[in-house]
Image (cartoon, rainbow, N blue to C red):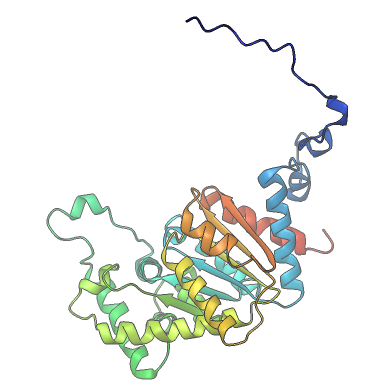
Length: 316
């Protein structure tokens, strides 16, 4: 039996001019002119997808800051390794970022920057002979700071920041933890035991790590309880910080805190289930808006900072 070509002559049509279309010329971008300002560049973007969402996110963050609402940032260590500490430090000094939440790797790279001005060993070169993660000073400094913090009854973020300041390391001005301690900006550190190189050092204390990191979880929950009208940015943490954020949010809502209208944004290289679900969609299901921003941190975070400062500049 031969199959005959289908006859299309009976297709029902409609007028293009009567149809709803998602894209119109009003949504098109405009050419970027020579010597354009950042503000004019942002205004030139197409009003589509991220060209719409990114400026909207900037306006939401500016609104939160003007209203005195918190802007919290959860981050992974890659943010530090691509050289963004000075950008984040500037935002802390301007009281735009009001709190940082880190995974355990962040304090390692941040402390090594403070101590030596360099970080991030080449794992493939040293893993074969078991030397990966065995830097003496890194283990001693951080584990000493954590144990001191446990005895003082403070969190890991504060303990490490204050210890870096006390040791007066040569590159403390490039350290998020040291700067935050100096400014009084809360930094919480959320650790999974066994994920960080300092856990293999003999100076590590599981009890002290657990005590100081749990204190920081409680502190982070306190910050989240006041997030109404503010914003939470997740930058470069695909698993740990999205989980911590979701647990803290359900806890504070359970305790009666009203946190149902705020902004969230995830910044990462690719779309991933946990960040999209736990940061962008679920937390803002009852109010507010979540954004998923895909791109390299070393480009997107400076663009975020510059655009936000431009938006906050009343006389620009």
